[in-house]
View 1 (cartoon, rainbow, N blue to C red):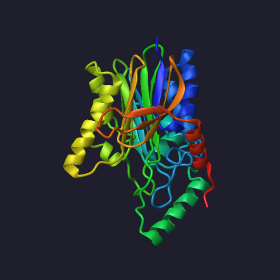
View 2 (view 1 turned 60 degrees about the horizontal axis):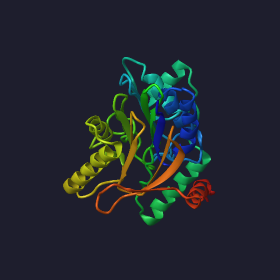
View 3 (view 1 turned 30 degrees about the vertical axis):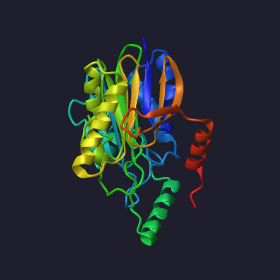
View 4 (view 1 turned 90 degrees about the vertical axis):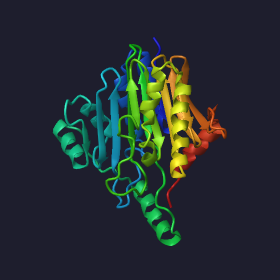
Length: 318
């Protein structure tokens, strides 16, 4: 039986490499999603997810996460979480709740304490310094404060045919206190159906949530479309519609995988993603949007690109 994972951004690769090894040994898609996203959340140099995520306008890290089980459509989600070490773990736990499965703000911490989960200060010194620098830039250069919205989203398929997906994000850097993007919203940031496949999104949440693109991608796969055709049609059709009606469209990037382990990606910006299956070793790809709106150009990330990426994210903050 096929198995595999696909995820947004280069930062997901180490997590899906470890998780797909577990899938090869008979592990579940549910555990694969949680374990892989935890690895991303725990790495302090990833500035848009978990510990190390960049703060809001008042210097507070607020995290969003979601988990969905494609076998029974159970969903758990958190938004505005400030002190839970691994939001994805709480989201997965909440997915088992019949009621109150989406918690926000202080409710997340109260639930975590009750259930015995670990709390910690999520603002690193590195993230704090980045925030302080941005405040100075805004004062002196009148720059837009908003920057960075790289959600880690993953879809997993295990050898039993079970599928799951999850997301985790610190959201828009310098966002308003309490702002929530698309990441924890079912149908927008993520969706999965084990009888069809799953999809997840990253980009400007305020625009992504207008289209419910993850659900639309899965719906199109359900008509028999290959994941590449489905995600491309869902993403680019709506991006064009939004640009026509509003005059502009933010960054959109989606990845998808069906229940056969086939996958696809669509984007209107340069975008990195990671894939691993029973037929493909964990691989980091770069996707470039086509000028004519067709399928993106996809290439394996070079060692030079990977080295530059690592140097950039770990460079000292002055």
